[in-house]
Figure (cartoon, helix red, strand yellow):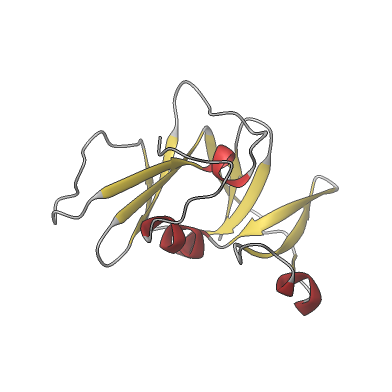
Length: 137
């Protein structure tokens, strides 16, 4: 199953099995097991020109061993028909700043990046800070 994630300016795809749950963002600082919860809005994390969303957000929750990561976005939908995903060529993968992309798919005749949310959550949980994104939301 494939999820369509819509930020203020962009659309992304991800595999549903990368996400442990989809819900409203929590306000707690720790989960029921005592792990800290780290929150980021996905749009500004991936693109400095994608502003933070306001209003209702959806949290894509990924539980790591010692932390829980909530990546938030204004819209998350489950696609009934999964598009064909084309893996990135090794040459392209080797030149990515961060290995957060698995491939590309055509959706409504537009290319849409397929994200590796588990890898993003791992890097965020380890404290990765991008130059264009300085604070957790």
